[in-house]
Length: 210
View 1: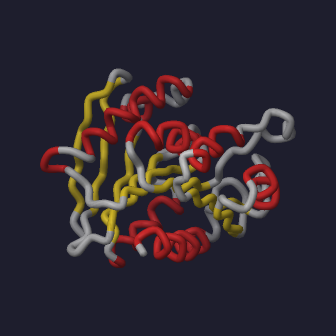
View 2: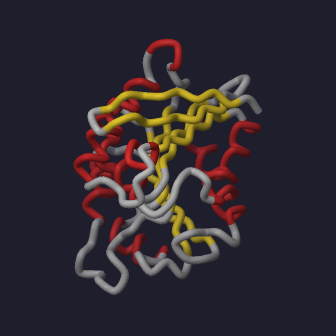
């Protein structure tokens, strides 16, 4: 499994894409991290197994993380950075094979949902989508995921069964039957059972690639 690293200039600073290319690609999966961690999270790392099944796999470090900051940038700034990141990865010699699945975990999932249409993604994968702040279900962020469904793009959400930001049932109730919501053991991090995430994502990607 060969790794290439691409540094990408954005209006919010330098981003870094870690690219593992499949030999006979079925498509590409591009994911980013959340607001409280980086690309070293166990689920994001475990998903590198997708390369063995023909998916070019990309993990993106957002500019605030590359700069060594501990607090994530505001949502608008995250989106402003993400669009040129994806444009860089879908053009020129770095051009990723289609279908293009973009996503991320937690805050990264929100960015992927908000920008999917603008960057021309073919599907969205949301890991630990933060449906609402813990203990505040009235502050729903379902409208961000709804943007993907309104564009008639496939949307998969892998949610921990004890996630304080919203359980799988909460997400399913908020988004309806068009969203593919998968249950995984654990809370918001999946740290003890990342294999659950790999299993669910692998199954869903088979429907995306046909």
